[in-house]
Image (cartoon, rainbow, N blue to C red; front, side, top):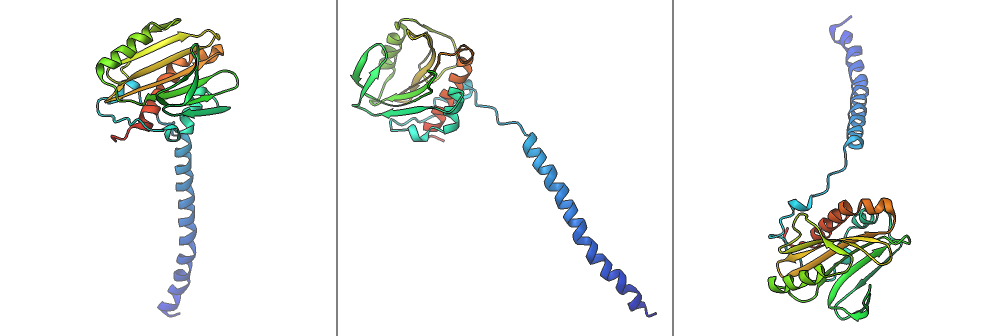
Length: 215
């Protein structure tokens, strides 16, 4: 047999097995990659204490569509059953006050069991002295107490309130440049109430990040 003829079967055999081996390697690699993706934990939320509030730029605009749906669900613990938005000069039904013309731009998400997630900005520019006046008024609110927590703007305030309807609310508010931003989460169910501090902090961080144009 000629030397070239003896080599031909081997030459034909090698190309036939190589694609099989490559396919197996790709299958194993893909499987490991998919398992890694499934095993990877979700990214941790940004702590409020890590917000660089002095560098953040929060515009006074209609911002409801900028807030991620996932952030709303996390704040409420479920998908909202209703939502509303309002602008400067609109009439709003304010709890304990009645219907008034507001000078704010805000959003409100609710569930049928009474949970709410809200956020709003004052329509007018705010300076530090006016922010101090707003904080003084907030501290006089019935059923509310100021609590220590990470800064949410400069100056800022954190409040925990027990409302007349039996619900509880945690609110963060503060000055970002010339914008006074307020956000809050409330709940009526006991289990949800215990989660309000964590939910409100994460909610307010996500709202601030959604509005921030200084990134």
